[in-house]
Image (tube, rainbow, N blue to C red; front, side, top):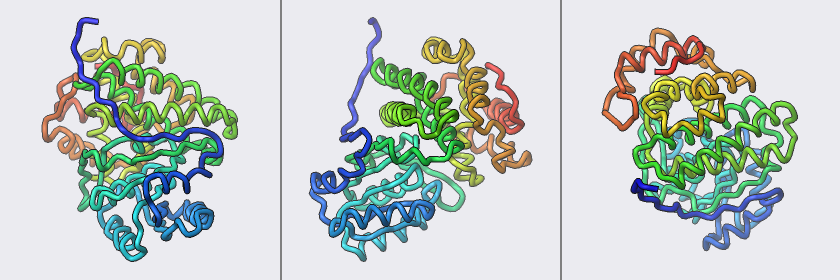
Length: 354
């Protein structure tokens, strides 16, 4: 190997396997916690309350108001509950919305975090917080944002709806694809990215065929963990910038937007980053953008931004917003280039390699 690189391993404890939900109390104690505030979305409130009952005196209470894109107003409410209940740590039970809320609390008060991941978001192992205020999503990176412990119990994902499983899985795959051409990519994160892509590529069709396939569910969690490590280890580029623009500026659904965009952002960078993306392209038939589009179609993932609520009249403004503030990307980012990409993604057309 002739090229130079820097690799910094990310700290954190991972507890993986069926039944590991039962270790939450032990993990709270291991972090020195005595009163954990359990976080969830309104949809998962019954599960959060059941976990609180299971924890007994270790549970300070439940806050079930987590929302997509981590609105600052919701974090304000959660902070008030945290203080009122005398909590000294948080347990985030759920996917990206709940994980984001736990991170937002930790960003403010440095509380220890335990995540019980129930989707394939991957954000649970990163030091990245994206939060929304007044129609704009901003990103913060800081070591204290990264959760200390993550529990992956495949049993908790058996009931995850197929549509969310697929969108969430493609969201994780997007982390890996961008990690391959990141300016600070290195051989270790690239190996993780390829292995994460491979695991999800073979797990998601099995989940579509049989949502209660325990091995497929475990493989998908394994893949999302690896993709999340990549996301938290290197810089992200065009794809994540676009998703944050659409999510914060146009209230687009998070995982579904990632799923619809990743074939197009991969195609945009395919030629400029051909050496870095070669192994990923092999996984998808040699044409990464087209292959990801065909894969998304085969598992029933959303492919048209128009189906997710984005209006055609908003494309020019979205392109303008995404082209602001220069950032590293293999293919130069231009407003016209981004608008052309968004027009194809909006219509659900197969991407064109740049």
